[in-house]
Length: 391
Image (cartoon, rainbow, N blue to C red; front, top):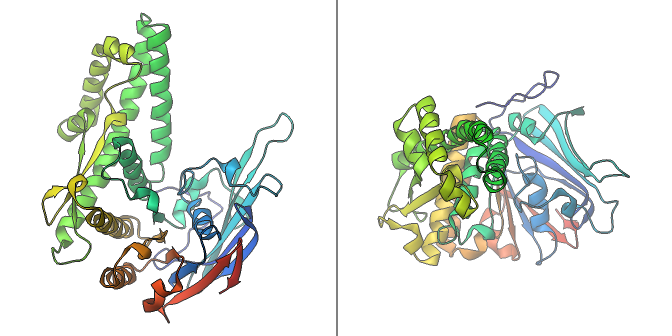
């Protein structure tokens, strides 16, 4: 699904798009950062706490959602600042240049806090509009335990995969969460109010099937892309993926309208059980992303820590190829402290794989030696105390 920007704003030619400048005002520990880059690889080096990940997070705000840390906007404002922040990016492809910006203004008096989004000086309604100009994907250390952690973590990861190709997916997920909370509250406070429960379950069914279908389409496309290009000899093993859940089984068999009817009937039948549990037990909120280590044909959760890390990197690389294929945009890839956990052979293979993706890559690392193999291909940027020391 393509997201339309406002009519007054013309989308750029997307293939080969890169960031050429990042400006942060009062964002995290960056009081006044202005960084210009020209390469497809950007390596941010510096000690822990210097602000490297903060810089990646500022770029991630130009995708739908709350960025790579999933933090509240108010927490991103610099502590000694005004309470708000602003971030802007300059984008370029050949002679085609654009400027996009986002920021946060805290509430004043009885007013509300505000999220601001602009494209070439024109205000747009939400970060969804940025999807016409760039796509952003990321891999952070927080994802290291993805395959052994709770299903909720994998659902969030799955939704990020979907958001990169369908920027409206987040709005559907948020609407579904609100509808589920309303149903749970009704079951607790007015369990015999059949009319209201019927109405809210109709909404839950419509939204739930829409979310499940979007997830299924992305997962199937990604699994197919991986299968078509898999190579057991690669240092980043290929993954087999599928979705597991009652509603996922429904949408795999029945057309959307029939799946909605069957889901709605299951919700109605499950009211006593859900009321006793205090939550809705079936639906997209119960989906799990099941991943297998392809070459070994074992669940990813049983693989070694190193194998899981390599498998996750391979999955993110495949997702980047899918985004490019589906959207015509080679995504901006943010890799936080990824190279530090790889042996020299895998690190060289990662750089080669990233080179083949065509998108711009931003990486962080404490040791400049991690990026020696990128000499001549990367902008090496030293960060210290929220400042650019050298670039």
